[in-house]
Length: 91
Image (tube, rainbow, N blue to C red; front, side, top):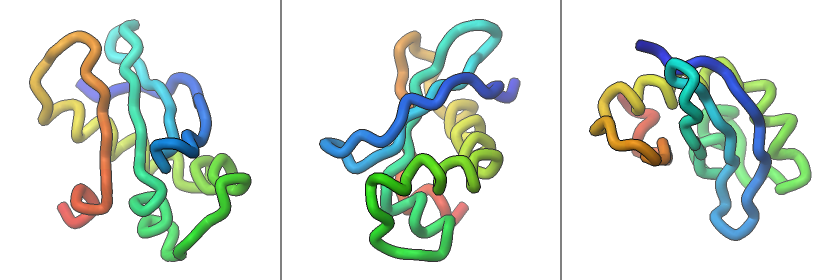
């Protein structure tokens, strides 16, 4: 079952990733995409952290679809964080 849209948490400068949540039948699923993966999806490089939210919003549907697909492939463990990187984009 696909995940559904939830909240934007924001850019995590320490992890160089953008964090957001999605829902699986009412349960919150923590998700994050690396800065490099977001840049690759956008066809650019070195986006400033202050521009990450706008970048996420412009790519949100694609990013959420990818997160949902990765979630479906992962073991069903409560608290599992869906993390994706550039290596996940070539699928």
